[in-house]
Length: 185
Image (cartoon, rainbow, N blue to C red; front, top):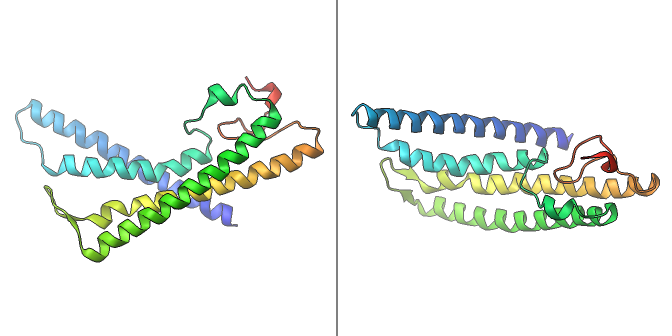
């Protein structure tokens, strides 16, 4: 039940990230076209493109991790034997949860502080700073939850593999689902 809710949240955040990517493409394209034909491009496009890049990163990161498409150290993990790979996946999960927890808490404190103080980002359009930053704790929270989910899955795989003689049928970070490790290429 909780997993399905998290999946829906991650999918919604991924769609929002995709929409922001479209906004970036069209607004940058429009700015280039406007300069080409001698029209002045709107001042707010650079400002909101900056915000969009921040939001894009934090909205999409947990979804990318869930799909196993995040940046990984394949050059190291591809050389590990299955038992070492299992240990690495568990350590990866613990480190991810730990780092995301610390960064979630710190970013939440900073965002709340910006809200309480009423700090405004003064550029072409005045925007309350907390509205720009609120995506950071949200992103670290969902990323930490996905790392926790991966960690639980790594422990389950380790338990299942003990019963199957060490043959893994499910992936670690960046793995291919449903294909035994020894047949992956």
